[in-house]
Length: 56
Image 1: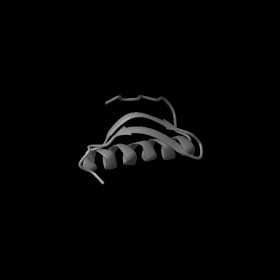
Image 2: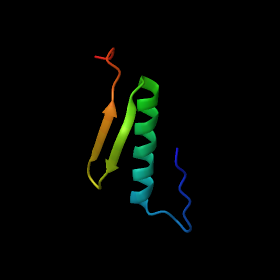
Image 3: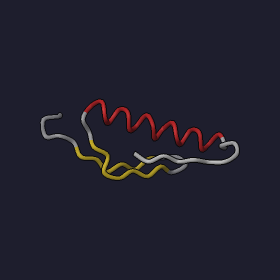
Image 4: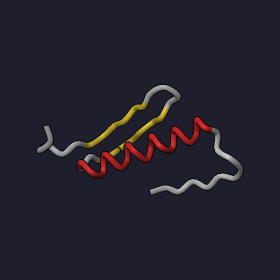
């Protein structure tokens, strides 16, 4: 897990990005999916994940 420290006030867009990242990690952890790599863009998300073979 990485921790990011920032000085000053975060822009609203940065807060949304952090929340999306947090929710994606939480959901993947809950269902047993491993995030290999993820990229958040301004209007979409790319995720390369490892899904257990027993999931459908």
